[in-house]
Length: 511
Picture 1 (cartoon, rainbow, N blue to C red):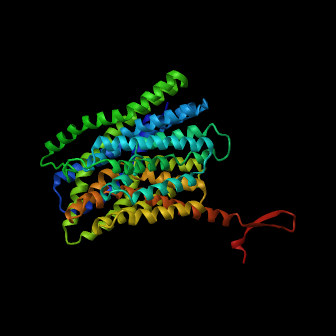
Picture 2: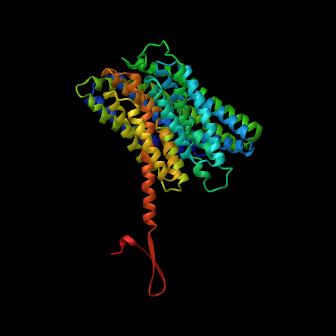
Picture 3: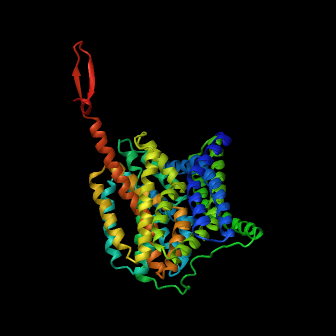
């Protein structure tokens, strides 16, 4: 099947390289510069351990189960050539996966001006509808950039008509729907659908599903804002800060959280599992060995997500909020900007879905874009995005001042950059805004916002949107640089030697 011990050890090492830098930064900051309770810090350290183990198990499970399920369902779904069946199943899959997406649950709980279930259903329908459009794009080979121009044009037309308190929530909803459960499945689904096409563009067209599915929630929440009145929930019932006075209360705090996230992750996996079992019975009929491998992978995914979400929500969110509040109350609240940038540089490496994207980009580009280069590019993007988000918190500038020029630049770049890089860039924007962004970075911004007297709904929210936006620019710039470099390396001349042999001489080495 696969070597559990060796693979697990390797994945734990990868998780340590991702999580330990951000944990170390927070530890140094709280020990020497920002005083916080020892119980809160101990809870954060325990959460770090759970995140490391959880990420390792999740990545193993995603490799051997979720990606395989998505690819198999996508391939079988399209073999029938029944367009109505493909669209209907895509809608149902999109809704079922998104309803239980952990990141969306966090955002919906924090958005005090919208009923939680109303927001979740609205966003889920938006994802399902755009997943249908994504299938049509792959099936008929429609260029991604044309759809991006049309739908982002609609986004910004409606943005000027939407209430300010709903604007940031809408853009954030587009980011959180592409989380650790959704991304592996959707990207593998795209690969499966593209596999039925024999043309050379098929693999490149498998990218872009995440980017289009990120637009659906934005438009859906905009439409909701025209008809929905504010809920009666109290503002700033936004975050339950969990502090622990003694170690016993800390232990029981985590034990109390485990059943909640076990149920939440089971709900998240159940729709996908049911769809897979239905396809297995009706048409897939995988052999026992392949089936057993996928089932073991689902168990790994389940255990990993439970540990990851427990560590993030119990250990990270509370400390993030208190840390932001303490910095915001200090005389040097502006230091929250460089700290957020440093945090953003490292936090992207701890996002599970990012690891999956980096690997798929490396494979689809045949090694031309390595995982290291892709990771470094995303780190730069998220560092800048976090800095801009805290500038918004401190100044109260509207979200449109940032996203309008940002998306304009991204769409202009899409005209000149290879379609593959454009699709990768917009997918990267979706996966960059994962669990750590929603449960650590956003609470940090909320803490700074409250302590400086800002409006949480208009100023703090929007951080996820900026994190989702910046990779669209930086990855496409990376693509443009790669294209220029490739052209330069191709400029060689072949000169005959005296003996008749040919020697390749690089022009820039000739004096």
